[in-house]
Structures are given as structure tokens and as C-alpha cells.
Image 1 (cartoon, rainbow, N blue to C red):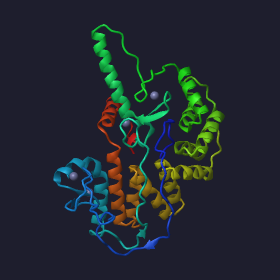
Image 2: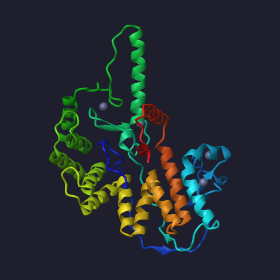
Image 3: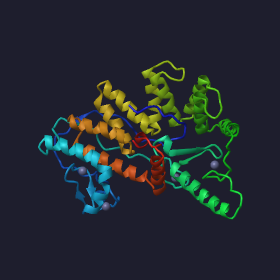
Image 4: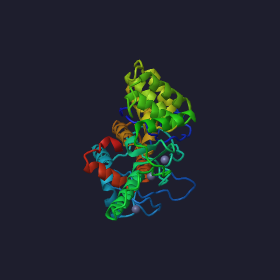
Length: 364
Ligand SMILES: [Zn+2]
Ligand SMILES: [Zn+2]
Ligand SMILES: [Zn+2]
Ligand SMILES: [Zn+2]
């Protein structure tokens, strides 16, 4: 189970397609994995460079992913090795058989609409809040990579100005270029103003400011829950997720209730929140409903959430999940994760690592 999010910045607020959990159907063919063909076009996709071609080569170890050539395969090994080794081990154990014959047919992986993008680099926003930035000035959530690059440029400018004995230019928002308010009161006032305009993201952030006593505010759990409920009521998935997490753990003055947590997480999952999708899968699995769990984990994994992939490989090892469906989901996961990467984001992660502030959980 992933832990509750600590911070209030937004994650993808997108709509999922239908998530109906169809009746399990036995499938006893043992076909080699081919990515789902859609309207006859070549759908083999190189997991390293994203090239589509019919002339790709399959990873011989796990038989799940395709590459243009050795170069692409080598380049992707760091990303792929964890899944590859585990699946290869299982295939070895079963003498190379892809399926054991008792797997449940989950059907085609639903195609999800695009995720919310960073308004600066236009790439999908990182899945985890420590790699995002919420700006109270404009109410935008952008990626920490874009923010890092903006601050890096500003520092460079100021270093040059210092050499010419000019005063430094003040820090600004990476999106709207408004001067950064350093004072807590100003920041809280900006958030309050946006709450008045019914901005669910501001509500979510201000809720956690109250809940954890941030930005000079006294801890006020009731206010936190009240604002979270308002935000959740506006169909803001991160707030729905957070409310569910407080119900689940019995924090922030709420009574512990799995039932209430599930209700909140189901709403967040409809909005595409990967943490909610993952946690619902965990609860269903604990209750013995592996089919429902796999449906949820397949969705979160295909959005790039690696925790869910670990659980799916477990299902494959138990003979519950077809190798083909596992392969399809792995390919979708790598595709999503490639979309989530950028040079600036990598630089920011490097910077955090250098300062000892990086947590593996930032990139699950
Ligand atoms: Zn390639
Ligand atoms: Zn492999
Ligand atoms: Zn960005
Ligand atoms: Zn701004």
C-alpha cells in the first residue's frame, strides 16, 4: 500500500474510460505475446525509443518488450532489468511456458485519455507530488523540472549581475513570472483568494496547510477536512485520494474506516488517480478478489506507476495473469514512463540526490 501523500500539489486530473470489471473468462491458448493490433497498423513499439515497426526484436529473456536493436535494448536495460529478471526467472521455472492455462482473461487494456500536462514543458505531470510545483500566484501546477530550470537560469542571471555590481532580480514564478511571495501571510492570502474562486487545487493545498500547520498557520484538522471535502466535491482527484487516505489511516481527526476510504478512492480512481487505483487493487487483493485487483493495477501500471507492476508480476507468478496481458501492460508502463521523463526532470532528480533529499518513493 502506498502511503498517503504528504503534500497538496495536484496530480493528474483526467478522466478514465469505462472501468467495468468484466466476467472472468478462461483463455487456454498459449500464444506468444504480441502488442494489441489496432486497425492493422504495426503496433510493435520499441520500449527504448518508441519507434513503431514490424522489424523489432523481442527481449529474449522476458518475452515482454521489443527493441529496434541491441543499442536500444542496452539503453533501456536500467529501466527494464527489474521486471525482466523476475519474469525470466518465472518463465525458467515453468520451462518457458508463457501461460499455465488457468489465467483469467482480463480483456483489452483500456486506452486512457491523456494525463494533465505541465503547462510549461507540455509533458504529463509527474505522478508524485514531490516532483511537482504548485504556484499560488497563478494556481498552476507544473513539473519541478521546469521550476528547477527556471531557477537555474535566474541564478545565472544574478551571478552575472553580481559581477557587474547590479542588484539581483527577485525570484519569480516559472509560469506567470509574478514575483515569488516569500512571506507566509502573502502565500496563504493568495491561496485563500483562489479558494474563493472555487479553485479545487487551492482548496487542497490550503487544506493541508491547515492540517499540518504549514506556512505559519496553526494546526486545524477540522478546517483541513472541510476544505478537502469541498475540493473533493468539485471532483478533484488528489483531494478525493487524500480524504480516502485520512479515512484509511484514521488521521486528521477522522475515524478509521476502510469503507469510507474505498468510497473516496473509487471517485479518485474515476478521475485517473494512480495512487487510488493502486490502493483499491491492494484492498481487493486482500479481500480475495484478484480479478478486480488486476483490473485496477493494470490501469495504474499502464500510467507508469511501478508499484502496481510489482503486484501484477506477482499475479503472473501465481498463474493468475496471462503473460500476454502482463506484456501489454509493461509496454504501456514503459511508454508512460518515457513520457514522464525529461532532461530538466532528470537534472532536478540528480540535484535532489546530490543533496541527499531524494527518496526512491518519489518515482514509484
Ligand atoms: Zn528503438
Ligand atoms: Zn526483458
Ligand atoms: Zn514541465
Ligand atoms: Zn505563477
